[in-house]
Length: 297
Image (cartoon, rainbow, N blue to C red):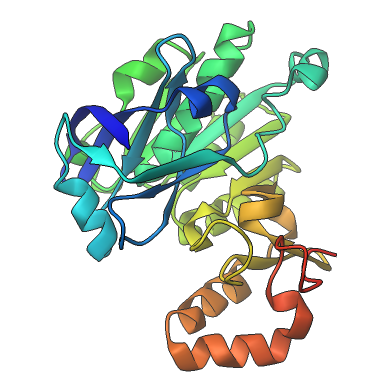
């Protein structure tokens, strides 16, 4: 059992929990995720790590209830426990590797965070700050009430730009408008961008950054289901290669992803008939990572 040391809300329908998970905290890096399970019969839910404290042995997760299992998570209180809390899983962010730190220090980095996708951006910005790199961060939300983690970002980034769709806080408009304004009106330029948020947001971020020849990494966490590569849900084409978000990612080069195809496939996967059709069409590449079906080759 994994005890919940702190449970609360960051905004309407956005929840934060600090979980006692020392083995996960000891080894995780920004960009990786965990799989949580509320009880013996609960669904396995993959969630990107929002923060970690190696000394305290804790992992922070942030989530938005979208189904029965995450709704059950939202009802858990401080002192309750998760039945399972497995990780770290997936590949770390390429920016947050000691082996490439000297190259990373030469880059001008921009993070673009949308909605609950703000949470997995934070550990990357924090890791960079702790290693002497101050990245710029854009946080986008529909309204002021849905802006999360503002104070935490202020302490770990160079410049923080907040924008709301309705103009109720910060700048007015989508995150893509801020990217354009920074480049075209405010004299900014970047070498590397990381955009995390809803699929549609990441799609238009990539369309925008292409105009500036700005390498953009996205997280395909939104299409993950079982987190092991065996269900086939997170199969995605990255250029002409078959990848699985939970095994090979969750982060990929956004300019190589056909977001329209990925979103269409995601919708198909939600029905039993759609899953069967995808499995038939994709054959042995429908699965990946289990080592038995060939989908990981």
